Length: 295
Ligand code: BG6
Image 1 (tube, rainbow, N blue to C red):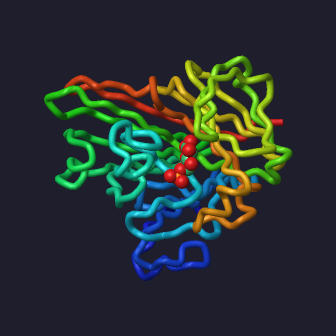
Image 2 (image 1 turned 90 degrees about the vertical axis):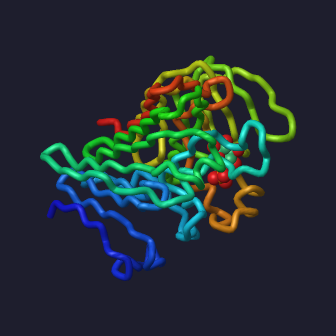
């Protein structure tokens, strides 16, 4: 049966989402099913009907205000990873760490569309001293379409970085493979020094991978062992690929020690030189579309 349920607090505690004060929107459409937490406007599950789950969600993820959910699609905004000038700021910005508002929901034969917004207030201004409108449109159907729109409503130019940080489920990391980045330059951020390199044809995983690929707007594909995913994007000239591997995974309290075997992050990013500078009234749309390639 189709439907969009905003499960009320106290009704939503379940084996997957144990915190009853943590609203989860569950979409059950004839074409696809999805769960979205209001905290972070965070898509935690997406599954086209008849297919395997597309996103990885850590069984140890924490559902508490102020902590990002490990898995699904965290929204990193308005900066990517460490703040450019202030190491005390939260990694990946603050959009993933606070409750958003649900501003619209509709459904049709094609799927369901939900719209969220993150209010700008005195707290956000302490972290990012600008006025903004931030809206996020999530369309669920045969594809998962994510569109993050930033409007600068300040009187000064506003920098906007970030990423749609999708955790894509794989059957076994050593057999996963990314295609579509051949010959693209990247910065390898593993270790203390950033090294610039060029990607060979295929990207496989046998160690920690933390790379920012530059000057690439192309879609990439991921062989997951369940299916082949196509990950397309817009408003992004940088793509990040990340897997923490053994030691980093063991140090994360919200990921099981062997959890790294079960996902690859492919992120539509605005990282480093790809940070956008929005003039007053300027708009930037960062988008990502994830679909299962037909055989
Ligand atoms: C990736 C970064 O995007 O996110 C990594 O490239 C980082 O460096 C990873 O470790 C996870 O970040 P976090 O803050 O969610 O643990």
